[in-house]
Image 1 (cartoon, rainbow, N blue to C red):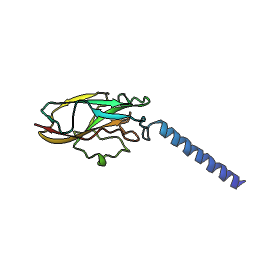
Image 2: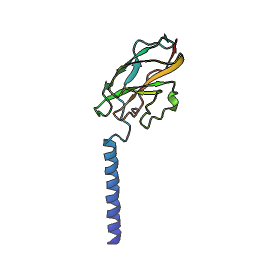
Image 3: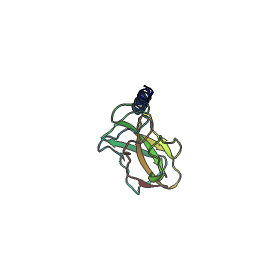
Image 4: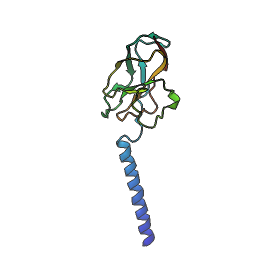
Length: 149
């Protein structure tokens, strides 16, 4: 009897853990799958471009809809602009920080005008889900090098 009770308790615990894991998945604690073929890119900006302040950047996306942060619609995300950040150093498992190098466009914006320090910069776009977490696999634009005069 005790052995059967122990087995039943163990099975109930396993079911509760599985249910909690499923519940966690439903609430965005795991990365959102990227729509197949989704892309992020800059519109009208070429690698090696020379720009003057204020710099206006236009963001594009293909194969994924744009939605504000905290809006969990299927196959959507929003842009993040990363400035002078090595893509290999971005932790794709967690929400992106918000600072001068990691700019969030959680309102669904598709352009920005900003002043950048004079000099050479690398920039790229990274799509984030409703929690600012990169999709799986990440939707990343080409890394562009620009010079600001």
